[in-house]
Length: 237
Image (cartoon, rainbow, N blue to C red):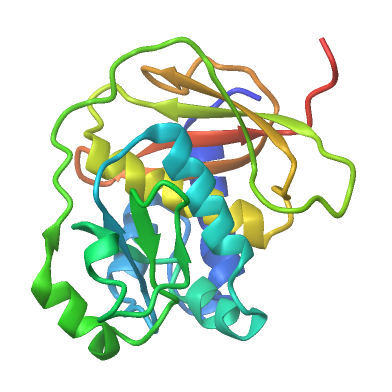
């Protein structure tokens, strides 16, 4: 799979149509600028809030997958219509457990997630904490291996997870990975027990891995870029 402009637009439009089929016929999705305008016109029906004490990539990926997998089915449709919007705030979840309800807290206590809710219901938490600030890029490192947490209910598979880091601060990486992982779990691409090999790369352009899902966003205005990609099932080497 060659990641070119046409593929980027096709994948971004596919996501828009999947989340908002009720609006897809009434907006211009024929160009990146039309897609951006359509996205700007939408208000999130619900959103989740993640409180992050510290960002450790493997722990955070595992926590994101566990959070999405544990959501009650009744909450999923509205969150999908809101494009799985999540706000990341800086704080220590352990100091907030007696004041706020979290749908998932990572075992190491480094991050916690609220269930998706209307924006007004999350105002007290958002007023208490500031946005998580991760201004630096993730440093290059060897591939990382992890297992999606939970009790497997099917034979596990192996996938690759590519993350673009060139010019992308940590706080933005969290946003892009959060969308990709949550939607992969909700779409049945990722299950408990699945093995992920995480590779940090400058850009996804030029990578020919067979991707099952891509996270497409905008950079430099309305130009589209692939910020993360989850590969199709990988056989044993």
